[in-house]
Image 1 (cartoon, rainbow, N blue to C red):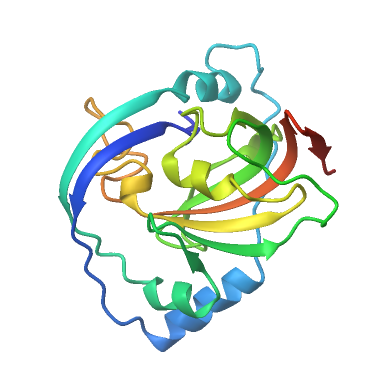
Image 2: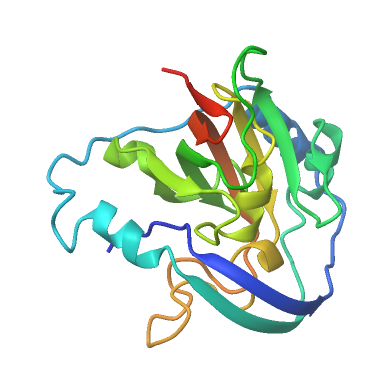
Length: 220
């Protein structure tokens, strides 16, 4: 079963984060990864977009808003905490961290709430060189969604807003802006089997196109 991560989450929580100093070697490794990003690509030609069990159909089914109440989350992944701060990551008031690997051309359109966007994305657990849990590149099918509509987890929705078409951005998304304490799946015998509860998610996203009231921009 393949996971398409873009489940929107509206979360109310009280969180406690614990961090510890990272080892020098870990910091250097994380620095190298952020400055020289790489994304593995694999074709998935066996999956038909029209099939109910295909990755595209799964993505559409998962694009629903869920509500969770979370208390007392403790994050033990201090592995990249220092590296994130020393590599030029910007931290927003919500706690989202982002870093522009490549800014889009200045003549290109900027994504804003209400725009329909098309993106390539890859997501990892633990770090940017950690376990990959999902990637649109593996399916060779960009994902389309409307910003501000609840079609994406909160961290991605916030991080994509303000990106310029053609740009590539990395995100560090804390649990409250992703799947919270439940993880994914949210329930059942396999609850949290794909994304454990309390996980910080690491994403690299390329903005391919924007379609809004002010016009359309695209980048090959």
